[in-house]
Length: 135
Image (tube, rainbow, N blue to C red; front, side, top):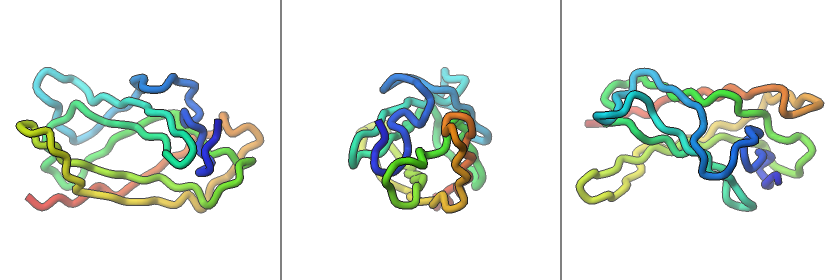
């Protein structure tokens, strides 16, 4: 199923809803006891975009950090959609209260996407500027 954004509801991965997907990070401290970040694929439906929830890391203090999620495929060129985009949101979570505060939001339009005959054969690379957090 393809939402109007052009992205497949599973980002072309074939992975089930609410399943952990491969990912790795650089310059991100882990929560005590973790050795890697956790990435959870949450399928999208009409008017509700697909999401990847990243967790398992501690407060990010450095100005440069990266999260890599391999094998995310190009949007479906046959769908009726506007320019496909990638949205990044970063929330700060108070561990004592569980209150979430949005600290960063960015949208990146995929203007120069080359659509293959088979959309499952070419991966998209997305680079989003990391947030600058005031401490």
